[in-house]
Image 1: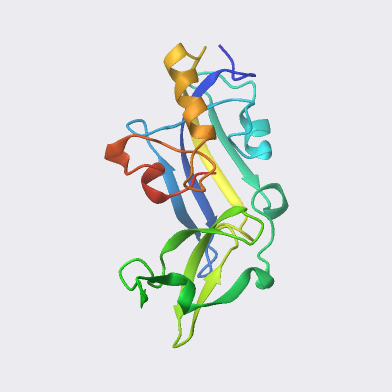
Image 2: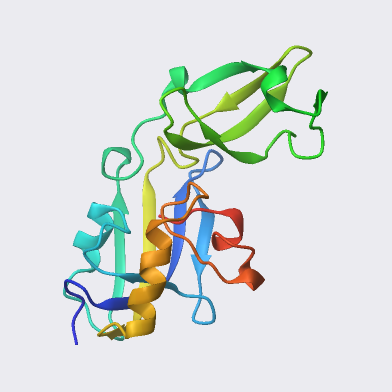
Length: 190
């Protein structure tokens, strides 16, 4: 069976980006046979360019392709780095130091009610500097992997997908298993 519309697909892959030192690639994410990337093809769960590159492959096929920023998460936009008043991060009148720390990624909402994820870059005396760019914005993505399963979705898999569409975590895809910690262990996949 080949990867095509509405088929369940499982892949292993290494996702690397161009490193800043010595031109070597830096590993950003890995999906293994024990923990593969599983998705329904053609349902908008993955980057369009990613799906184009794996379409038509079958179990055992290997793949290697590169996505430029405009095909992936766009260019890095400096205006998406903003300073927000510390007061919006208060709980019971106190700044929430446990949850708000440099490097944390937080679910946020803008004035229009749009949900987004923001990374804490810096905590200053009166403001928190947040970055609302995707963590891979501006990066050229290199995927190397193998197709390990392609099949018709089961009723259980279809039911699980309907849960993903209603995920409140801000992730593009969501693994709702408790042992994984909710949404892919707090990380969003491609």
